Amino acid sequence: MNHPTPCRPFHFASVLLSVGLTANAFGSTTLPAIEDEDRIRAAMNEAPAEERIFNDHITVLSSPWMGGRLPGTPGMEYARDYVIYWYKQAGLEPGMIDPDTGERSWKQPFRLGASTEFRDQELVVDGANGEVTFELGTDFELTSLGSDGRVEGDMVFVGYSIDEGNDGYESFEEDTDLTGKIAVMLRFEPMDEEGDSLWNDRRWSRKSTFASKFNAVKKRNPAGVILINPPGANDPRSGALMKGTANVIEGVPVFMLTPDAGEALTAACDPEGRSLLELRKLADAGTTIVDFDGAVTGGGVIEEIPSYAENVLGVLPGRGDLKDEFVIIGGHLDHLGMGEFGSRRGSGNLHPGADDNASGAAALMMLGESLRKAYDEIPEDQPLRSIMFAAFDAEESGLNGSRFYADNPPHGIDDVALMINFDMIGRVNEKGLSVTGVDTGDGMREWAQPFLDDSGLEIVLAEGMRGGGSDHASFYRKGIPILFAICADFHDDYHTPDDTPDKIYRTSGVKTVNLFHELALDAAKRPEKFKFASADSGGGSARAPGPARPRALRVRLGIRSRQLPDGAGLEVVNVTDGSTAEKGGLQEGDVIKKWDKNPIKTRAELVSRLAELKPDDEVQVIVERDGEQKVVFLKMLAPE
Ligand SMILES: [Zn+2]
Image 1: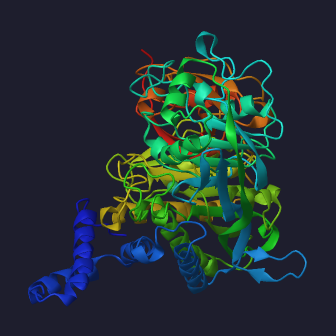
Image 2: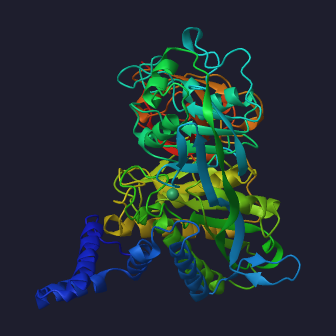
Image 3: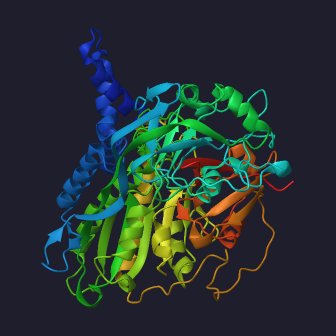
């Protein structure tokens, strides 16, 4: 095939972009000159058909109509319909089979967490100095830090609710018993005149976390908790109310109040007529337990509504002896929507996800057609494996779709010969295409090499399983050989509104598709499956399970951490100044839940993840901070 010159993709991209702009400008009075239209038409006609198709798929999937393809939204539904349309055009069959009825379908639904619905919230304080009815959303929220239900009782002010603080600080008296009472608690920890922590140079110490504070109050057995954002705190969060996402205390309703609402509560109930700021200053200095002169009535309903996501599966049936074995070709279809979660910048704006991962989804649809055609031309008596095309949902929030598939495949998991994953193949420039996994099957490297050599691309073979933050990791974990393709030159538009379709390199994208056409077709024909080999040691061959050999890390994270019981994650105990962790915004008290989209539970796991990294590599970390999930991006630094 005659490929255009290397400068071509950019030219082609900009021409197609201007087509889009022209269409948008039809309402205005200025239309481009006719010769411009001819220039655009000529460029489109000259482009090879495959580049036009690759372009179309990416442009459609990353259009505003798809809304950034967030799981659970209409845009994601449109994206799935689009993929199904092209699976049908390619002549694929629905990939799901109902085990009971034998009925076939295109979609594999799975549970994806839940959304929380709040109802009937109310909070009224009846104090010696007056009654206050708090306004939902303006003054207070019932949070999912605790449970729902109703509370009624007297109030006790407990300062910051801290046990064993610095320098012998204690919030509670030895005999403080809150049974049947409502604890009124300040957020954060003792602070100075500027509203900064008295105990920590940077931000707050881990004594300020919800986990720590609620653990302390729980021991005193309260019936409810009112958590007040303290006046004068130097923290942007203190001005806002939250509903929270993580439960930190069982069976106890927890209300959150603004500083102003907290002042109103104090004015109604403090026996000595002090302001909340005055009480805060007392709590800054030490133990301040005050029996408020007033009672609370409040409550509400918190309901978990289960939410679902769906993988889109199409299958090209195999033949003969190999029919029941599978090659899986996957890529995630979802992205970040408006960037509410997981965005690196520009949250609230459309995150088109052209490269991440409309490009991989485009590859799936194109391979569906090209491989079906190839199968049609192969003599009937040639045994062939079945090929499953899997557009995964909910990858961005932690490989959810692929993990569900690997746990619930519509075929035997041991029948999978190879899993191929595409994630961001739209920005393959002169630095090349990164391929991970050539050592995950015995003999795979030797097998793949000639195809890689003939691809017309600069191929960068990734070490070990570096780049485990995408859907292939779900299959690798099941002992399946994998190949993973991603652009080698990681770009700054990743997870931002700037991942737009005009920036796609169409020629190299199509070369990538063609390369994996050859690899998948050959993998589907080979008489024997590759025997799985762990690539975790970073070397070439399988390694017996056992403790990893210690080796020098090339990067330094700069935290001390504590492994939480029951696999709840790694708590950050300390952050070193100027370290990778500090620069990326990790904070003391954060609980690290996911590393590169994979759950992380032990320090040993963290060390082996760090061993894969080199300076300047970027890692996405999901932490739980004060009842909410946050995404932190770490750009790794070398040890000093
Ligand atoms: Zn991706």
